[in-house]
Image (cartoon, rainbow, N blue to C red; front, side):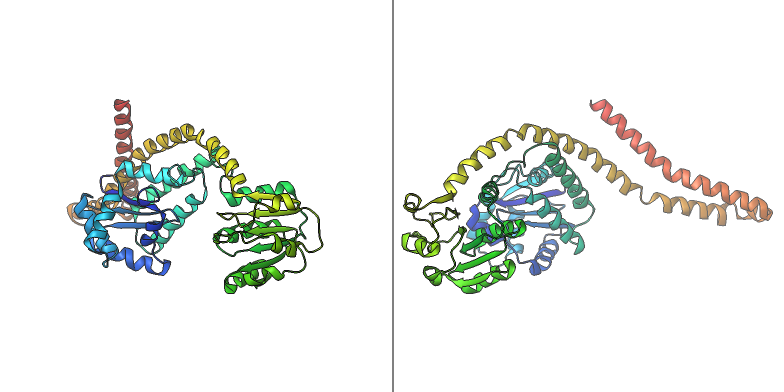
Length: 412
């Protein structure tokens, strides 16, 4: 496994703002990875990119030291100058051999994630591998590593409760809404069409809500979300003129001021004095706090949700001992899988060699003797040689497996 490596840049090492400099558009990944593969003389490479990490998984003959990293980063982005590259070298995290395998398993099992227990990462790892396999960027070593990685992550999520309690603000907001249990024909007003509200709307749409009005500073973005939801899109400037009332308000803008003040809230409610649900996912809050005392509001705020998230995260962390035990056992298992795979690769030439020996024996060494045999004897001899050929091919593999088993016993 000495040739297997991982180079990672994560939210912990370079921060979320810098991560974006390592993101590559999907249509450019093959070209960029092939460039690295050729310039660095790599036999395999896989590119994993998420919102909080970028990792390069590859097989190389050279040691991954600072000189290697400098050339690697230059191959990744030829526009970076020496200062940029040196900065990233200092902040890069690298793993080699079985430690690299252990790291990938921890990533897929969400132990090394920004939020422990988030299942999405296992899909991201699988998709990244399938992409690299499809475009012939990766081969056998990465294949068996990822297979064990995915298998282990599934075992972690199945046999522990590390992913059971939601910790994301959006998930918790949706769970709280389900507890309140409003009617599916409730009038839903969405203020803001960014990533957070879009994710929240996916939950709402899947739940069955169907009456939406979307307000956003950029009308085009509101229209995209409205098409997805089957709702109506309007510019944010029209919010103060909203008519038709609402039952659920979901708001998340980037404003530094309270977007929903008393006059606007009164306009949103109209003559309706029934209690309203306001899910405010903005930081700072979009809803003026004074409104909670002025109106009847079920206010679901980020502060409220974060309290629940912190408690749930503590529960997830309690599972880490079980998770790490599973990972340890699967890494140890992988060591044997990898050894056996190397034996299998070495044994690939045996069938052809056996066939060559048979052909030489029949056509050259014993050709005269065979010419004296009658047809029936030749048929019997062919059957014997076929049988012997199959047995000779299987015996070395069986012996290799026995040797590995004996070696494990001695080590224990």
